Length: 248
Image 1 (cartoon, helix red, strand yellow):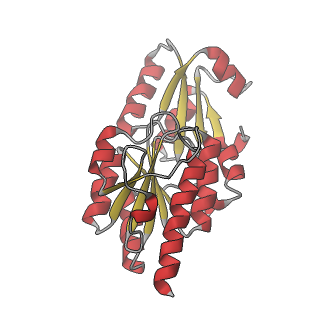
Image 2 (spheres, one colour; image 1 turned 180 degrees about the horizontal axis):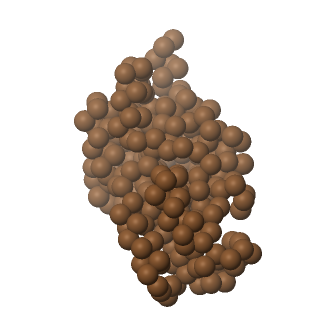
Image 3 (tube, helix red, strand yellow; image 1 turned 180 degrees about the vertical axis):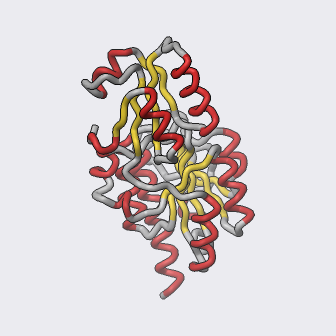
């Protein structure tokens, strides 16, 4: 872990949260007790911060310093509010393109997706506060620096972001194998958003149900799925292809 993105110690983490530092995730030792730890727990819950309860061995691997049972990752980027991001993009572009990641958990997949998003002109990425891959040094490296170029917003629930985008005139497409519709039969030329699911579970059922359209990739071999970052690239470049063709 890059030292500039990590803090440790109960009081230090409490102060960082109260100072509105962009905390991605807090690692708390299992069974941690005491008044200060209870204060930390309350602040974490109040702010909806992504938290993992881990054995002390995990914390010792994260840092060799006196962590007091708590280590936090501070994001190297500043996150946007959903409303701020969507309103600014919609006011500036006739056909914006957004990407929603439903609890994607692997930081390298996340970085690869951010890189592709930047290359394909995505106007903003939306992730969930809890259960989502953090923006770490590995994420930044895998994204080739694109994480500093593509706006990223955090929301409490991806489904709520879907509803907000729809209310803003944006058509939402869920990438899933649970449909007969091909990605090549969905219209991406208008204001659009694409949802990609987690590596193991895909898009959650309630979010999938909220989408305007569902689309899948044709798989001609025996393996039933693609890596999520690869699948995301195919969806995004299909949107690019359609939009380029519409202009010519």
